[in-house]
Image (cartoon, rainbow over all chains, first blue to last red; front, top):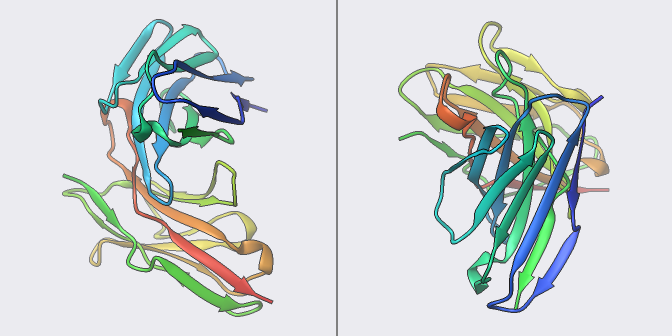
Length: 114
Length: 115
């Protein structure tokens, strides 16, 4: 069975500080990977997606970047946090080909920027 | 552009009662449709999905949803709710063959089940 692990579970960071969030998928080779962001009390927005190692597509510009250094790992980062970055970050995966449209989400990272 | 509307921000029901959560979508063709549930401080879990075929789809935990092309709707239902069904429910769509399999979410409906 596939598992998705996100780290850390929560972060409290200062404005202007760097950030790195991670996600690892086990049990699925060559998954499609996604980052979503949920503002407090709000809906979810897709930030990035990746269909292969080393390739990341940006969907929304939020002064964040993403990388896929390994087949099973997806990293979200920024060098300077803004207050508006606060929220809940969710990593997700899907298979390739038929059924690729079904996304499976991790448990998320809650980020508070002060 | 595609969109998803969940007209009810909050729904309160008594345990054992039936539940219906409404979802309307806007898209020029037939999209893929999903219901996800988010329990407090957790990620999203897939309840059910519709791609094509039988408009009534069964999901986990006795949830079902009915797709209506004429009404552009995908309402979620459960015959008898339990207190553990208290959560936020999101309806979402994706467009077939879209780059990035982008899911467009509604704002969510917060469900409170009273004992």
